[in-house]
Amino acid sequence: MTPEEFDPLALDFNTAVGSGGPEQRIKELDADALDAEVLFPSPTANRVYRSIRDHDTHLAVIRAYNDYLAEDF
Image 1 (cartoon, rainbow, N blue to C red):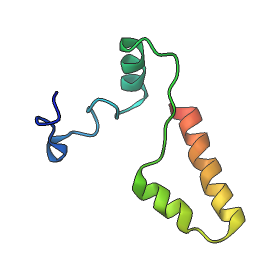
Image 2: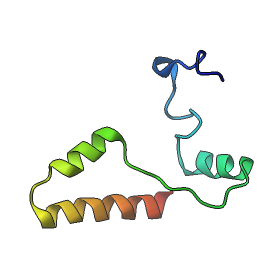
Image 3: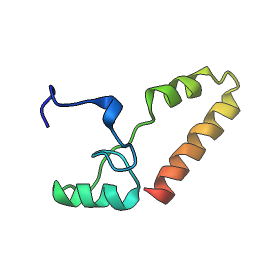
Image 4: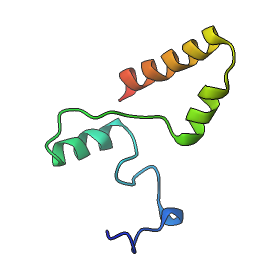
């Protein structure tokens, strides 16, 4: 797909390349001959994380997100 053909409003985020569930991610990694990848939260989630003022709560939310990624992805 070229940049001109890209239409973010037409994307199905359950099946779009670079998104979807763990099974899809593994298939994409295999297709690209990659053994690992770095996953980042969305910009919206990142803003929410940064808005948490209580230090312990902030760390707990980040830890929960990392645990989720480690277990599911």
